[in-house]
Structures are given as C-alpha cells and as structure tokens.
Length: 495
Image 1 (cartoon, rainbow, N blue to C red):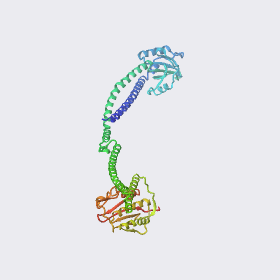
Image 2 (image 1 turned 90 degrees about the vertical axis):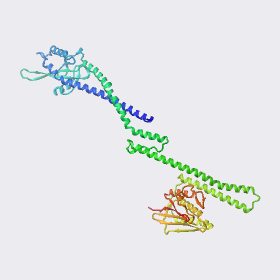
Image 3 (image 1 turned 30 degrees about the vertical axis):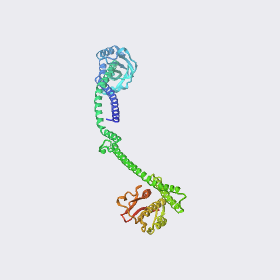
Image 4 (image 1 turned 135 degrees about the vertical axis):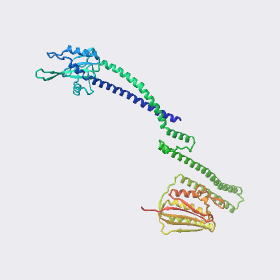
C-alpha cells in the first residue's frame, strides 16, 4: 500500500476513533444519568407512602394545638435507625419547617417550596418529582409527602394543619451515590466501552479497507500512468465506487496520450520541415553566391550581355527566396491564429475577373490558354476579400506551374443553394490518388516528371485560410487528366 493511501487510511481511522471516543463519553454519562434517574424514581415510588405512615402513627399536635415535638422526633429517630437515608421534616401550611430530624442538625432552609409537594400528593406519589433539599439550597431531592388533617369532633370539618416532608435520599446517601456513580462510570467507560471500542475499531478498519479498495485501484492506476505506463486505465469505471473520478481520469489519460501522439507527429513534421526548408533556402542562396563570385572573378572579362544574364539569375533566385520566406511567415501566422478574417460582402465574380486578368499575361508567356466561366446572377459572398484573393492566387500559381504549353487553366464560379462554388482546373499531369490526401499538408511538395516543384507551402496556406472561413478545399484528379481544386464561400444574407 503506497504512502498516499496510508495517509488517507490512517486519517479516516483516527477520525473514526475520535468520533467513537466522543460518542462513548457521551453515552457513558447519559447512561449514568438515566441509571440515576431510574434509581431515584424507583426509590420514590417504593417509599411514596412513608410520609403517610409517619402521619398515621404519631400524634402530631397536642390538645392545646402545639406541636408534639417529642412524639414526632421519637418516631423520626426510629425511622432513621431503620433507614438512615431518610430525613423527616414537619412543615406548616406555608412550607415553613417547624421541626425535623436530620444528621448533625445541619439545615440551611427555613422554608421549602410547596408546589412539588402539592403535585406529589395530587398524583398520589405516582409522578416522579423532586423538591427542595433543606440541607442544600441548590439541590433537589426525591421525597415523600402527606397532608396533616385535623377533624372537628363535632362538625367533622377538616382543617389542613401542615405537611410531613420526608427526604428519601439524604446527604450521606448522595455522597455515597456519587462515589458509586464514579465507580460505575469508570467501570462502564474503561471496561465496557473499552471492549466495545476495540471491537468497533477492528470492524471499522476492516470495513474502511474493503470500502476503499476501489480507491486503491485508482491510486495504483494513477501511479502507473505517472511512471510511464500510458496504457494504464481504471477498469469498469461505471462500476467503481467513484465513477465520476474513474471516468474523468480515463478520459484525461486518453486526452494526454492523444496530445503526446500529436506532439510527436508535430515534432517529426517540424524536423522534416526544417530539413526541407534548409535545403530549399540553401539552393537559391548557393546560386546567388555562385554567380556573385563569378562576377567578382570575371569582373573585367564579362560582356554586358553576360552581366545582365547573371544579374537576372541572381534576381530570380532572390525573388524565389523572398517568396519562400514570405510564405513561411504567412503560414506561421495562420497556424498561430494571428490572422483573423475581416469578413464583408463582395462580388466574387469581380475578384475572379481581376485574378483572371492578372494571370493572363503569365499564361500567354507560357503558351497556356485561360478560360473564365461565370454563372449568371451570382450572389454576394461573405468573406475576407484579401484572403480569398490569396487562395485563388495560390491555386492559380499551382495550376500554371503544372500545366504544360498548349494546356488550359479554367476559373469557374457556380451558384449553389446558400453558397458559391469556386473551381480552378488545369490540364496538367494530375495527382496520384495516394498523394491527394497529403498535398494540403505543409511542406508536401507536388512532383512533375519525378521532380519536386515549389516549397509545398502554397496549398497548406490555402487550407488554413479556408479553415478560418469555416470552409474546406478539395481536389478532383486522375493521372494525365489534370486536376480541379474547389472550395465554397457562403452567400451573404441580409437577415
């Protein structure tokens, strides 16, 4: 198991143990509280008639109406001998303590609240309730209570004379109960809960281990991918406990691998491009250098005709070099998306006519026939006129280059639904089928009679310009039957 999972596993385990400890402490104190409440309620119900017993077995008042203190204290002492946990108090009708029997005579209250006593008597002692503890102003104790009623011997009228108030849990018993409670909490907490905690911890660690098995698979797959295993994928991601994470990783891994393959392809193409460009740049430079050196060596021996010839060759090589560099810059800007089309409506037939007339002179010099075919009522198109002109020029350059003398180059514009189709055809040697899918890639040169012609950048520029117009260029060609390049431009809509 790797370090990352170790940390996560033990973090979960520590958090789980901490939660168990908190719950255990809460449970221990709550169970102790409930146990004490149960004991007190049971004790109160068992001794609910104790106050009535005292009342029924002692003459509370003398014949002159005074409290029979001696008789009361005698029976109270007798009760305390039998049950030392009780404390007996005689209250008047206002709750004032008239006499009592309590250990060490330590009584802090002179009067107790009668509301709990009245509730106890009204419910005949069947309701758990606590009242004031005369020996502790801040404490509440369970009790038994009974009314002291005096009957008139003549009228039989009953008069409330006071209450017997018996505390069922004395201070001594409370101290003992606290000691026992502490021992109970210790036993329950350290022994009982300790065993439960240990069992729960072992079960929890096992369950965490089982429940995180899919997470371990994900972590292991990520580690393998990081170490170079690009084929590593999370199996059955939809069945994983973390399907979104598993699916996302697999998708991310596929994208990374695809990007790596694309980068490798680009790098290979870059190396080929640099090699080819280096060769093509070196050729005109070598020609220029050779003729310049010849002119320097034969400066005085060259005739005016030879000098003009050499200068013409140097100028032609310079033009070729300049055009190549210009195409490289243009293609680089297009690939870097630094050129954005400035689209506007224009008449495509006017642009076609301009291009036709510009190339007419070049075609005449080469002995190539030019033809222009236009559909009637061609609509406006919506595009960047300068970039579209560049596309047509590159295609015309390509057509004239491969068309032999007495051949023919045709520019044709056809109206289609919602677009205009532009075709440029030649009667050259055509393009083999196995080369047609590559001719628009940068630096893929076309050949004529086995010889490579041009830099191979013109058609790549055409493709990039049409891509930023959301259009494509295609070729129709058969060997020895010429080639037709065609593309479409959208019709301008006023809506």
